[in-house]
Length: 309
Image (cartoon, rainbow, N blue to C red; front, side, top):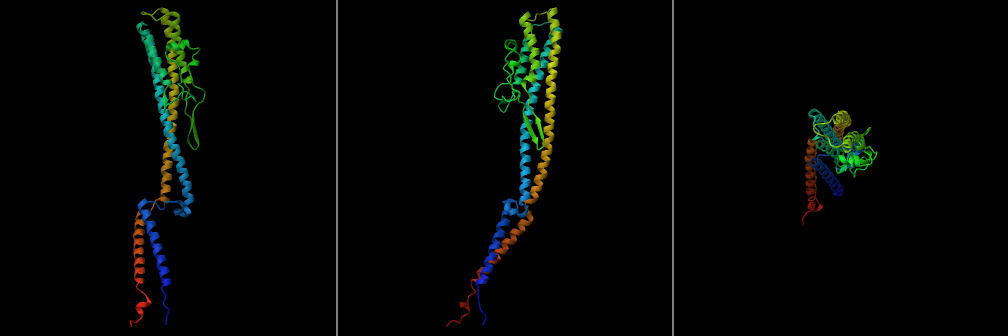
């Protein structure tokens, strides 16, 4: 008589059931998340490669974020340079107008307004910090308040509060640029031009209408000083523009790198959704089949084979 035993069969069927459950969970997770796995262990031999790619991607994104902040600061600097340059041009126009009309009645009022524009430009802030103050970002770049302050201060240089620190920023793995400008470098020539007129008025009295020969001669000689100072600001603004172009080009390269790296990472992490759906259906069928076989096996017993007395 053959020996009848169900223990081994039960063990095998339970194993199949557990495997089917595991496969169903794995396939369901892939369908739900769109990813091959939710942890590095699930990527097996590709885990180390994936970690390295993600590290590079994180570094690239960090440079992109920093580049955006640098670009915004450079834009603020460009706006400030435009304000300073326009104010210097306004001052030159006021002098030219006085010379053309032979009247000095309104020249100092116009120059005062232009000077205030220069001061405001030098004291421009970005994210609450003074951008032309060097390392002294919490202090205004210049303490000048009016044309009168140019002659009351010990010197023009004493009106600038910046130190000599020039900000530098790393915009990519292999590129670092100096993005900072100092108020003393940008504004000294302009301040000297304004001071020369203020000193003249304090020494010789206000400009008259009509202008005297001496006043006319002085303004003619001073006009070139203002024009030269304005050109100096334009030169600095052009340097800032070159930095903006370099940052923009670097950001474009980094964006391309990020897109490529993201694609490579996706090749490892992104699940084949069609395959995942098929695997899920197969796992569900296998689970149902295993459960059905176990249920049917429960009715197989020696008791059912024994005759009833």
